Image (cartoon, rainbow, N blue to C red; front, side):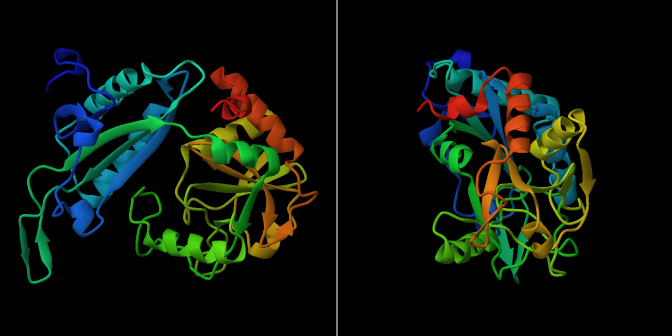
Length: 311
């Protein structure tokens, strides 16, 4: 496997199936199963001060996803860690210290060689790709200042009986439809999906939390993907003496919350100030959000909110 230091420096760099190459040259054939059948598991993480954040947790979740879809790439977990570090180091060298990167790793079963009777024959080598791009904080900056609007659409979350919610996958059509529906009523909103039983699940990019007094609730892991950022929020909350519960919530429950928060990789934690067109409490970012984003900033050595104002 060639190292990026062995060749003239491309900008920016990607990794694809054993090669470091210019990002613009990283392409998949149209018959890759990630395209033909949308069979893709993925992890997205960010850097703080140009260092991948919580990489071990992301790779552990990827390992579960890969085992669940029975795909084993040639690259081991240790090799993937090394590759992510190399690509990140290379691409972050073009950034100043005020900016950071979003890192994406995805794996597909690889190229389909045979299509017969509606069945695809999987090839021997899965596709593995690692890319980065500079973090765009423009949306996060607005959410830190004014809060995020959520709308609950008619589209429902895919139940665990169909796809294990612990798998982080890239088949996003239902989220696309849900967000389009939500934005018909509020063009700035994101969709928050309910499951088939009417309980709150998640958005396309993160986990939802609701504060009721001194208790913070977040949906059950049986219905939603366990988020790396979600775990950070739970840890920081417990450090402040806030009780954290994993429990089912209805839309009506959520509407009575003192605060609603959304955790995600890019923005870490944003306040939700509107739900289905109605303001949440005062309609402004609340005190727990301010405390937690301050604690998170202290833990990573970056003022997360201030960084978003630097473009």
